[in-house]
Length: 416
Image (cartoon, rainbow, N blue to C red):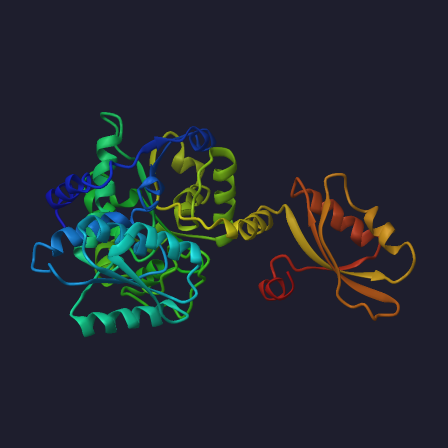
């Protein structure tokens, strides 16, 4: 990848959409005492940066004898939508393989972007099965596989984000800190490579989901590693193995430069940015903003910080779960199993222990046949996390047996 090649790709991209905005966010800037600039890739035509790499791949591949061939990709998310948009732009046939479990909303959006130029095939329950089917189809028809991140043309296309950033910052201003989300590594590889002579290596911060630390574990091992399992909540960045080319581009970074953002902390960012700024962010798109809270104020204070917001393809059917996770992480909601006496007035006595800012959000008897005592699942919301300290003290003073299961993932998944 060369700067000239990236700049040429950026110029070519103007055929299909204008540069995405780089916005100084006053809310975040006040919070951290810094100039926080957000690169809004959620405002691209497909609401993510993925269209850049796909466009660049098509643009370059079609000049090397790919005319008349069918393009193929495997994706359940943003790559599929960028792929479909570009197929329609170049008016070439494309086949998108998606897992059968893909939400209908994503299937419909992909079909809208691609129109008559794409065919969607639902294969397998998980991505690996879908990807295998896509590769088999490419071999069968002599098609062209468009990878999501592990290809030089994809990396070069994603690097156009960095080219735009430098042109959009005020004259004479350069980033002191650049915060980048990492999934397969295409975006981070392109941006860090393009900015390598502008931003010192130590001034990049890379962010992965806690449940999918493929880059961090690979950096620790000194080679790409396959994670045995990943948490798919941050679906746009839940990658079990960093790309080979991407690791080569990123292996110069220290593992400590890769922050792992808890999934529930990401939910706090999503709800906060929606409520305060009106931004609709997908979990992967909230990674870089979440990372700001994980950095010390001393590192941020007075700095020019650029954080890349990678996408906004959020399914609002997930909003109740996101809100639930956010409240639990912020300490505003807890779940308990209580042991209450089975006698008249016991429930009234318990309710009198609640504070003025406490509210019952869930109440369910778990054992209805107990003679003397009953087990109750209760969810309590409050306005200040400190309220729970007083509540638990009152539980203990009244000798109410309880177990806090808020952070017990096994019980929470089974019961809540």
